[in-house]
Length: 564
Ligand SMILES: *[C@@H]1O[C@H](CO)[C@@H](O)[C@H](O)[C@H]1NC(C)=O
Ligand SMILES: *[C@@H]1O[C@H](CO)[C@@H](O)[C@H](O)[C@H]1NC(C)=O
Image (tube, rainbow, N blue to C red; front, side):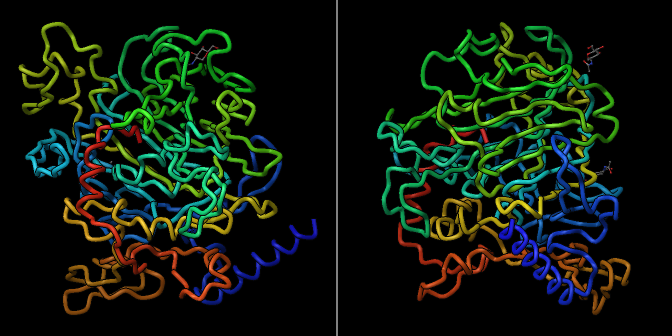
């Protein structure tokens, strides 16, 4: 209790200092000043503790999310190499309008040069993706460990038309989605036991006495995944009476169950799958349609299975026509670890640690970042198996209808429905001030990531896509303008360029600053002679010791895998 009180005081003091610097009445460094007073705290649905708002984004209009534009998010501008994606992610597909984040998905083909492996050599190959869509990642910016996350969103398109794969999810800091080199042997590991047969499959494992990069010895690390929502629109009824549209709430972990796995689409045999302690809400059923997958690598000893412990909940048109609140309660206290998903405060799914005894995987305790995206994939809501006589290799629209040559392999009505907009009214994260396992930061005292990422930074950007580092420095002003109103609050248009003032950032000064109240690296580097490395990856100076091309070529080879 004493310790908790001291911590509370420390946090209050930190906040007081922040308040003085920022001259605002707001608390934590990541809280959006537009969050209403009613949103400053929340009470656990699964308990009675009161939590404080530690991060929010209310998505005021006029924001953009290209590299360096925003302190909270980066909209990736690259091909998606995962999950048989039929889209290219454009940073311009993500805007804010009507007080919400707006991720547009359209039929808008993109041709690009893809770096592909040919017998160990990188060959630039012309590729084309028929759809354009958007993904924002909080990677390297805002991360948290433990707490409550709420997302109020309206799903894109129509409940009855398949083809889109909107998602809101969390991923451990050590992996960056769509950058496949960062996810191999890292995603979705959550395992802290030394098992020699699994050691080659988990890069940071509990067998290693001296892993370097500021990591603790004999400690297994990785990047687990928590999906608040992955929505499956469409019509029809699946096995066991599950009607589309529905959404899945999942925890994805490695190691997965290696043998005697349930058959996809069929319920598991007794004792075959995770069941201990799992609780399903009303109208919710276990997900028999995705048990995870094998992540195949060249050598069998490097290949591993990832499991999805997942539940499905039918939804209706109202989830595509109106806003609803999706919520995760993520408890990280050693004696009370728990994951609980809610929709509009109604229980969806509860996952306690006992459920994981099947494989020995751990409950998530890594710092995680938020991702919001809409994917288009032939593996999600497209006719499957491929209808007889259909070649299922083209997915083009001609105006509002499918190209007749492609239509047999496409969901009905997809072309007519596009463009579609995934709107997110807010993202809010709350933490319990009395729980010292709840932390803000991408690299914390107990789960450092900064040095590992800095030491492997080539994995977190795509040199073949013209990128030169994982994240760009924050842009402050300089956006084109004609009048002051073209620039954000407190800012002015000077010589046709926005000049930011106060706490406003981005080219048009419309993004509110954000920062961690506690910089854990101070503690981490205490006693070292090396200079303090700031959390911001954009500024981390690192000498590349390996050949970039060789490393990338190696990873390109394995781009196929990775359901991230
Ligand atoms: C979303 O943004 C697009 C432009 O990218 C715009 O055409 C559309 O109207 C916006 N949608 C909403 C719901 O504001
Ligand atoms: C939920 O279940 C109830 C019956 O328990 C049923 O009447 C209702 O239609 C179901 N709702 C959905 C969205 O499936």
